[in-house]
Image (tube, rainbow, N blue to C red; front, side, top):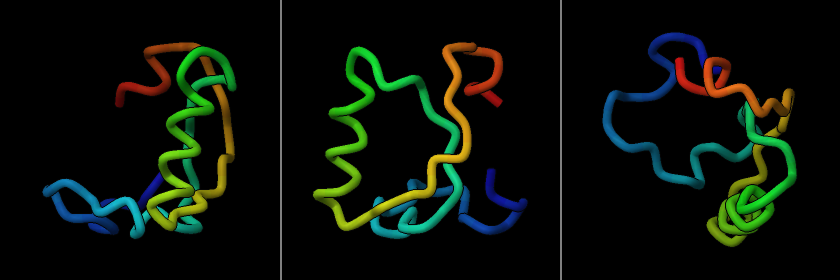
Length: 59
């Protein structure tokens, strides 16, 4: 959901995702654990859409 150039091509520090719009999986399986890991890292992204469709998440 980020504009081109908003993040570098390198791995993004999790803290930098704080407040960023995020498209995620539904709250099933491991997704809650991933969101907890973001919180522990100091990031509270804004989840704007949840989908189980791989084609949506793999852009």
